[in-house]
Image (cartoon, rainbow, N blue to C red; front, top):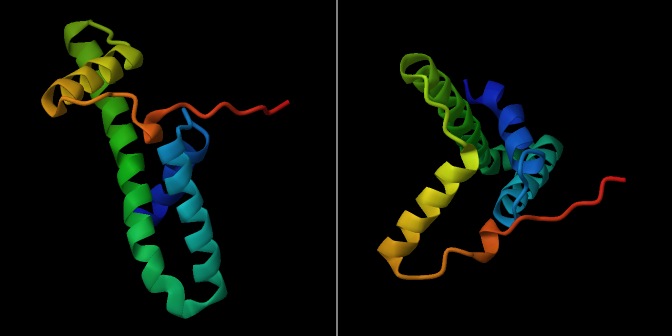
Length: 112
């Protein structure tokens, strides 16, 4: 089952709203997948990577589907940025620290 969500996890970590943390996880997945394909004994290292990528994919798919169901039931549309800001403000107040963590900063990419 996780094998089907692995490419979706790669998409959400390497293409969709890239941050430093997602880029690190995505590159970890790329390297582990490559080396596991080269040497069969390294397949044991691919299991945690597959779980991580599949978990990210299922999380995004579940989040999108629950928003669609909520919109159909209630009729209220919530913005992704507002949800992320409200979560980061709750986390900051609970921890008492700064919400601008190095891993959550956006990566600027030039594709042209």
